[in-house]
Image 1 (cartoon, helix red, strand yellow):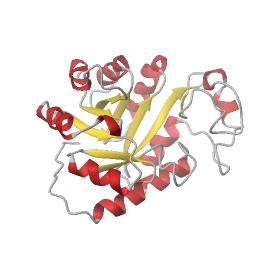
Image 2 (cartoon, helix red, strand yellow):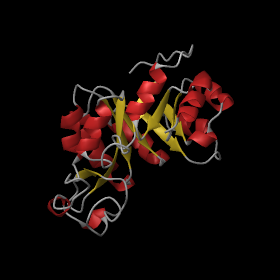
Image 3 (tube, one colour):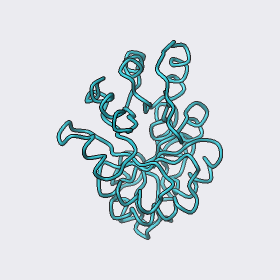
Amino acid sequence: MLIVGHRGARALEPENTLRAIRAGMACADYVEVDVRLSRDGVPVVIHDASVDRTTDGAGAVRDLTLRELKTLDAGCGAEVPTLREVLDCVRGNCGLVVEIKDADGVEEICRLLRERGPKKLFIVSFDADTVRKAGEIVPGAMTGLIVSHADPDPIEAALSIGADAILPRFDLAGRALIDRAHRHRLLVFLWTLNTPDAWERACAIGADGVASDDPCAAREYLQGVRTHHTVSPSF
């Protein structure tokens, strides 16, 4: 069972900051970050379309330059990092999951990932066309379709764009879905699991990985669980 630190490790440090990423790297197989473009076209790591919730600033990310974003406090004095800074942080130390939040930025984001991305790289999105484009631009990366609705069929949708994985919301996943995905050679990663009951169920239904806000707690729990489920994807 692979563990993905959600937004780095948002239960431990301010989400999507280098502090959270370093905390996640201590326990996770992969850390996940959200990427969109600043006004001047720089890939930056922030979840929301606006800076209001996660920083002491206000306004849309796409209306702020990198210089303006760097003046904001993203929590505990941390800055909004660029994707380049994240890549430098994780290089050789941990796998990386990049969720592309801004479909307009897929080419710029993927260009940087192609040039500087780690060997263990997953590019994911809710938007199927973004996933398809990412697979074309960064052929060495794994790709995944994030799923928040049961309809349309997530497996058919993923296969139609050449994705390597589906990432269903936890309540949408069951043994039947995961078994069918595996028959089609698709990996299944569930989000976002933060309790022992959820981690135990993920093991029971055969998930390949889980995203957690506290990857260290997930790691501690899963290390204590005896399971016959074996994951052998080629990363």
